[in-house]
Image (cartoon, rainbow, N blue to C red):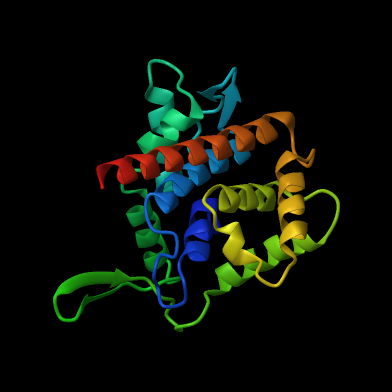
Length: 223
C-alpha cells in the first residue's frame, strides 16, 4: 500500500507542531482503531453485515498494521460488532502508527524529562513545522467543508473520524461553527459512497464515540 493511511493522517492532525498529542488518550487510541476499520472497508476487505464486522476479502493490503488487523478479524470464530473491534484494536495502536511515521521520516521521536524528573516523548516533524501530509489532509477537509455536494470517500471517512474524537472543533477555527456542524453532519450522512461504505462509517463512528464515552465515565468514577 502506497501513501499514508487514515490512521497516519489522524495522528498528524491530533499532534501539534511541538509533537504533543492534543487529544490525549483514550480518544486517539479509539479513533485510530476506527481508522483501521475504515481503511479496510475502503480497501474492500471488510463490511458491516447485520451489525457485525465481516471479512469479505482476506487478501493482505500491504501495510503491516492493516494486515494484522485484517488477519485478527478473519481469525475470529464469530463475527463481532465494530465497537468490540475498536476496543480490541486500540491497544498500543498509537505507538505503532507513530513508529511508522518516524520510520517514514514524516515525524521524529524526541525523549526528554520535564523538570529533569518526568519522562516525556514528543513527535515533532523533522522541520519543526507542520508536516506536508498533514497540510494536505487539512486542505482536503477544509475544501470539503466549505463546498457543497459530494465528498470523496477517504476525505469523508477522515472527517467522520475527526468528528468522533472531537478533533473537528480544532480543525476549522476560521469557519462559522453552525456551518461546520451542519456540513459535517451532511458529509457523514451523505450518499457520496456505496451503501456498504456509508454504513461502515456510521457504525464505526458510533463505535468510537461509545468507546470514548465508556472510558471517560470509567475514569471519572475512579477519581
